[in-house]
Length: 320
Image 1: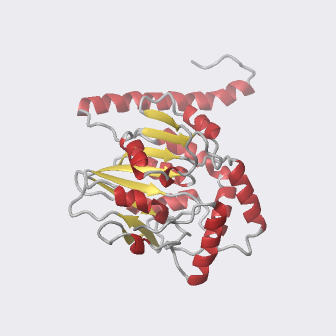
Image 2: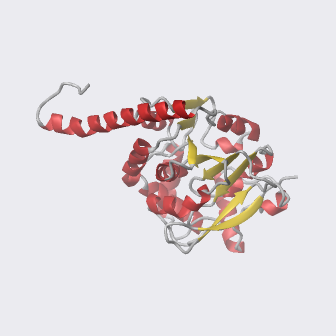
């Protein structure tokens, strides 16, 4: 029987203090809840030239599954909150959910605020077995990091999912928590401290996300709850508007869902992710799709470069 993990803001806050005091990296150890054959904690050496060990939860399989799903979690970055989803995954899927640098069981202890550094450090997680296809899921703060990882590995990532993505704009709950945490940085545990600093510092890095989405060649799926009060739905809609011209971009608003889509029934989230797995296509179809989308991306980039100059020169007619 899986023990219940704390989910409310007050409960999670207390669990963080308790875990820090006892030296635990999980609020409720997954090894207590699930057998090692179902959910297993592993560590991977970081990329980007960093001598860090990156901790993650994974689903052991006797042979590689057709699809591998890698999840880059939000802030705070706690893979354990995906344990029920991992445990319920069917045998023909495998999943790896990471504790990002600076959180839970991952190194370093220090705050890593640069999303490009984190993307490089997490790149080894994208390794697949021969013939295996990979879906990359970025949750909340992890969405921007996942986008950078995908743009840097177009041959590996077959589908990119931005799940409840945080795109530099905070909802009312997130604003209150960051404001509260900023005033108490000296007194709160490391994971909460690093989360507050990450969220506060992301808006200045948002251009890296925009550039990554312009470069990404795989299908991009934006999934967001209509009742998300951490990362506003409107911000996700504005981000999607930047890539809506692509034939392989998709937006899905999940009715009555909040920020934590992984806290609901595992089957519901599995269905959302399954819908993001592209069907096999012929080489000719893939080439035509890529050529069409590449042309659209180049035209969009040209429009963005020309528009400021036209405004400077006093021209107001739109570029077509």
